[in-house]
Length: 463
Image (cartoon, rainbow, N blue to C red; front, side, top):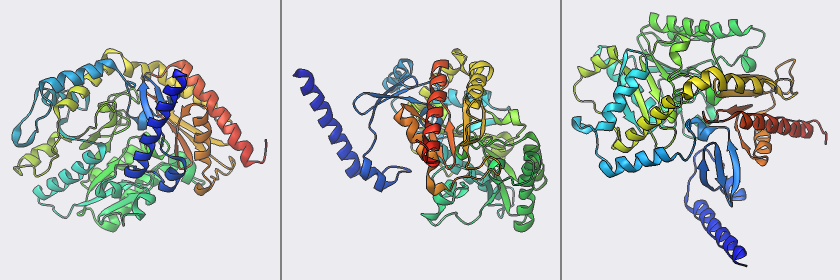
């Protein structure tokens, strides 16, 4: 009887939470009609790679909370660090030259973890804010260089750089533009290297070079004296983990440098160990003038972002006097303290080495076993990031119409078996915590195979 009463109380509390959410919470990237029909998913706790939802249901999170919880959920050492810093210095701003022991040390640490010419950090609360900051700093740089017309920005199709007005404009995602009358003037897009979807009869290598040379065509149309910044992701994770070849990066940079265009690299997802490196772009031969860091910087334990600025840019910006930009909580001491502890954990537990040398290769190898499935066109990945491209016809690489929701059907089927993967267009994205183990990887592959079979049977009229 007591157990029944406790269960009833928990259910009543859950119902109150759901009703409060439905009545008062405006969710990001959520279909409001679907939310009203099915109600919110209440996540009550998390530990390691596991989420605990509703009345104790356990889920294996193979997307690490949108690709950010690199060290895993619910670590006591992170909680202890948060309590320590709150007790010492719960908050003070960094305006007018103020700093604190955590923020100053974090800035130094980031300069040591990135290429040697990136020695300045501007702290923000998210990757969106860091990318917005980069656009503003680039505009300031060109004004100080006597070229105020170089305010046009080029990004790539399928890109995701954030949700502010400018960063949403940078996104190569029409759905994020239509609702808000975007993109803003002065933002342009060139093709993504998503060969499987868009490569046609070209080889992957030829298609990649065609995509890179689209920047040259854009310069010819707009004018080199007007384009000041090129925004790229080393891997387009949000597009389905789309990679670009070394030849592509070499050609793209050749064109950018020939026309005096600064390069901003968005490492929001790829940084802090996901690819087995602190930052991934040097491995690809990319030389950045700006780098965006976020997500894995704190493993999602606190909102954070940083715009890393190259020395030659920072020196020009210093000539402009006061930086007329910032956020109340830029360089928050508690956030910085948690970032430092997160970096310490990543280093002391050799998580980058493990991802690069053993866990990452095993993860990729096991996912490749799904490549022969009738619904799978291509499995792409490196480290602990992978994209499974879905296909209607392998011979022609024809995709299912997006409004058919095949990707969502598969992710829902996996969710019903306790595994969280992310549907993105016609691709499934996996980017688990860096503490995922072999048994969890095996279980995920088994669940995905079952989910693919279930949806394929439904599509083909099978049982």
